[in-house]
Image 1 (tube, helix red, strand yellow):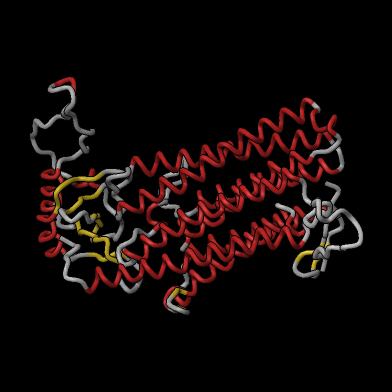
Image 2: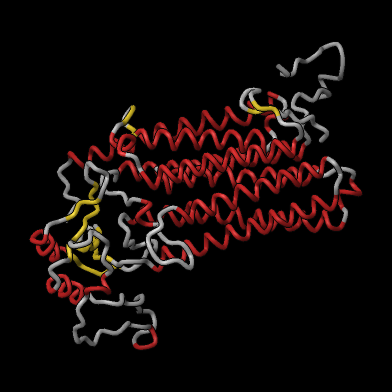
Length: 127
Length: 324
């Protein structure tokens, strides 16, 4: 209730005149990001699929980073986390970040391990 | 920083008199729920990642699977999902606009924005249903080997995918579906594929241009294409014809891919569906003037949080299912 809206995004680079304007601004930003993702997904530039960083294709890094950017703006501006107390915001965000990060880490490492076992093991999978 | 500092002198602190988060009970509980639901979804998505990492060399390529747009023929990877994503983001926007209008106590505006949000949600669920139907129905058909691997077909001249109906031979056969009404009542089988294994094998042998494509992904990130000699050799490994996808078979490749597709988009679709129902309830409450009488529209913000969360999850599903 009665919260004041913070009208600046991009760390104060862009400040909107009203909350309604900010909502449309964020929509434009999210749409541009989605358009970039779809375009990259269709074109799949060689440079990005043939090179990788930390065992992941550059293209996939771009997709994941853009997704996190989108998630940030949905949570901060649509779900009003920007206007909430820092305590509430941190309780929600960091809990999720730690638990989900941990879960992804252990399960992906495990998946990769099983892949190695299948590959190097003495069981034939393709017949 | 606006972090809360407890002032020991004022306020009945012991009795819980201070309000560190300045959020109402309902809003806090909605955030609790959203956080736990986010963990459920990440459990699903991480399980998907786990299985994909296990079969990283043979996982289906999503933009070869989802290539359809309603009312259009041809190969349009991703366009329809992109449209669905946009619809959901758009309905998120109308939702925030409803909350914004609620702050200003504009009943008509809230009503209209809630209405548009519901419409957006319905379009999204409808699109998902269509996507499911297309996925289940299948496209080209494939053969499955004894080891459960999928063999798909490609035209050697054009490099395009071939559907089994394009080349399968027609052989005289009397095989009919066994239904429980025709024999013992507890024994039946599912619908037979449009072509028998023998017909597909004969078709491949008769057409020089048919090549088999296996699940294995090459260094270039494409599926392995066999030569004509390898194709003929591979045929003997096939045990059945697969058309479309369900929880047991999947013509697009790994069965797990279909299973996760159904579970993750299904679970998300269920959230969208309940979101639409809850939004409808709130819409009627706004219409009846419930929040006008209450003096504030916080309820709209609370269901809004749920609705944005559904959008947020879709952003991740979109990335991990269709893009990466």
